[in-house]
Image 1: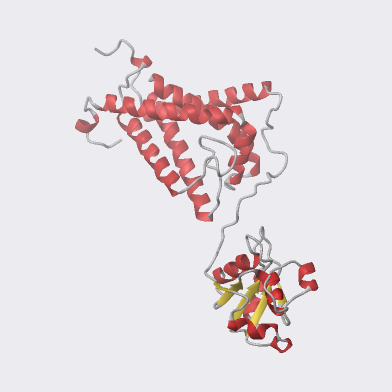
Image 2: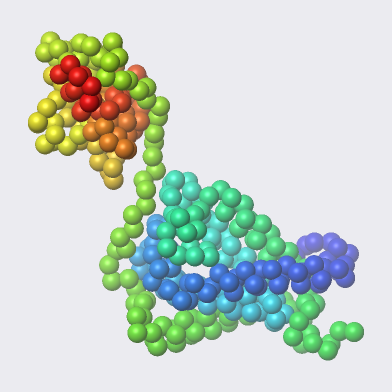
Length: 159
Length: 171
């Protein structure tokens, strides 16, 4: 990371990053619930993107929600925060590519982000793309600056 | 705690992915409706196709421009009438000289059909549909306009309205 040391070392980052972590962590935990509850519906959502090969759809639908859960827990708890932020950033980047692909094709489908059950439940749009882009920036911010994160990992180690 | 390095950040992220795979496998194995890790067959996804819809003018059955369409001598004129209804409805009644191009709501009109319309030499295309809501004529006219055909119109009320007009009464 080649950001200026003085900027990275600013003490306020850990508090701003904590807010970002709680927001992103809560978001990912919430997003994982419906996917774990009904993996078949989520697999169908994934299939409608027409992005992944058939052989990868179910495995992706089964594993992704648990990556979201673990990343969410790690962000909220302050455990290996930058690894969690890296996971979130990679997921958001992947979602952005898939979303852009679907929007480019003009597909009218469910995002699959927070609900399953068709485009009416959770439709994709260019707004979804902007929203995901903002979340990607938040994750990158945490990854870049949260080097002494507040949370269980540093419990009692900071004054 | 050791200082984080890019390598340790990536390593811990991969470790979390490994745990996620184990959790996913564990929970899935306990489900009565377990999802197979590889889908046995293609998913049947019904996603509305990207519509290439253009603008098509709308005509009414009493439009003077349509007056000569119903005459038997119309066939071969400069206006091409396309009937968007199914083959059966077309066989039951159609405008003299009309060409049958049944509109399919789920599949685009074949390129060769569009090419044949372009090659017809007509200067105007009037699409007659079923008059329903949505009207197959309107949909086909918009699709053809979106595919580059100029001077495309559709008939409001479709074939039933046109037939009624031909019989000298309103539907």
